[in-house]
Image 1: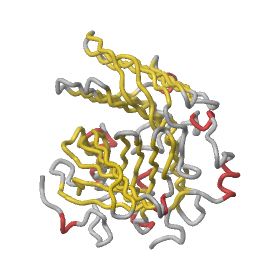
Image 2: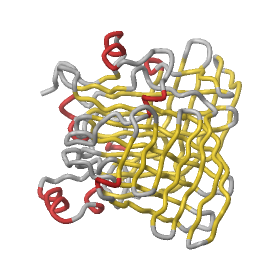
Image 3: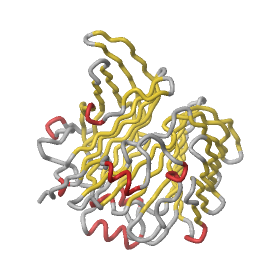
Image 4: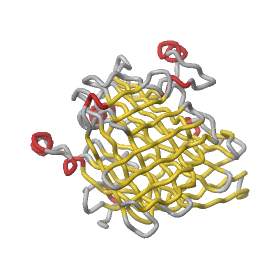
Length: 374
């Protein structure tokens, strides 16, 4: 049965007062630790970069595995590095709880000699796993942004929360990465966001598409979040578009999502859209943002990444969460009436996260009747 409140972004005046944040600005402490790492909570600091040499980099500092929020503090680092020569490195490394620390007045996260530190304008990220080492800085080109409070709230009491802060929607990356002792200079564009919550995402979210990218003078962050079945699969769209570093569109109420060219991913069994689009109309300008998939970077089930008793338990209850990351083209168009005013295309990376089962209802934006195996 669907609850009276089906899921939304907290945007009431009392929400801002309760959280203690401003409508007009983001404070450095908002990127500091927002949970204590205790049972029932989770938190992570995320960074990705598209480098000028063609390499792609993702680094995530986490308080625990997202699929196990009821564990005590169990820090981990995820690192993905895709090289221009086609080699790809993917790590998920666990660390002792006493190796973790995080400041609460700004981003300053340490895990066993690795660090993720910054103050909304400048960040330093160092991660070293086996023979892969990353040492980069990120300098913001666009001010911090959040969709209203950044809190997604669920349930009749609106007390089930998942929160999201894009602290650096677009920035400049400099530094280096090293593989097996071979060092390469790193320059390019990057992004950082911060997420935390007080309830397992499997209990509130069925799936999401999330994307960010840059094409011409534009930078975009776009997401289409689908609530859990018990919340009626309520969609929560999120959209931010900036031009020359200034935000020009960020009203979710003016955003429409469309998914086409759907197929069933053979590894995860999940329906996947080959093309996802976000349409934004402010009455004067109409923007169309299109992500067209070329290939997978990652396609994993959660169960295959689990170990021991957790893997056995997940299989027994039929848990089939999955994570897919894609690379392809991002195209940004600006229309005025029937006239195409601007069009820019560049490469981008985006993801599909599944916490629940694949939907079969008619309201599914990736409709089963579209599906074909791939």
